[in-house]
Image 1 (cartoon, rainbow, N blue to C red):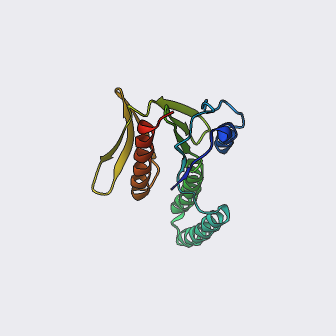
Image 2: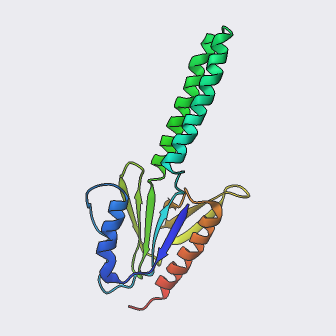
Length: 193
């Protein structure tokens, strides 16, 4: 999983917003970040899950498993245990489905933008649906909740609303991002514009 912090000038906000929508594979420009041209962008981050292996590598693994299963299925058939053969094929089909689901899940992304007057979160699902949330950075609290010793969740909380961000990030990456987000929000609270 990765996150890419970028500081931008306000005049590039619209072109960067178009890039985010295209990255979400929606095919249609639905909207923009609606940033004012005189506000500095304190943080502009796109979060993405770790990508799966290359398609060729996944296909090679799938073929190797299929060949292995065919060899075992043939040995079972030759010994008279033919009902085992369909289950050997089912293994390969489930593995192919898992590879496809992993590749599809890697299409998710989240864009977090912080300016002195606005914190905007745009979440793009693996199917291309975009949801937006907007907060006033002065009232936002970054809450890193510990679930277990090694696992935690990152929430943005304000006025009774809570939004989970970075759910697909590794714990160490999520902690680093939380610190960067806290720093940008702190900078937004003290900004003079």
